[in-house]
Image (cartoon, rainbow, N blue to C red):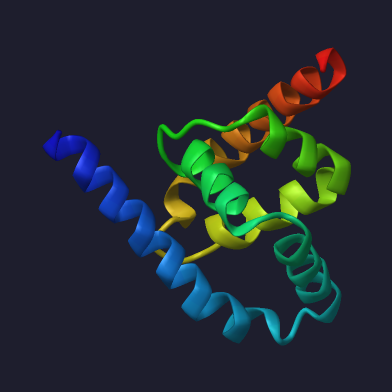
Length: 115
């Protein structure tokens, strides 16, 4: 139980840091910022948190969230995860996160095709 609580706390800290720092870093990247803003508007906050939980932790995702993500497209998925994994405190494991992102995308596409 303690490990689960610790992981959840870490996840919320990551989300808080992303919310705090992404706008500051993305101002220079107009097109990337537009994609980021579009993804956050069209995917529910819960779905975004679930995606982050899957890629950066051991979270789970619903089929409905997978459907929403696939509907938005791979660029949305890639942008969301790339922005987060580029943070200085996460960049050391960026390759691992990007692989999990791609595996997650493949999973969501397969779920969407069978639905």
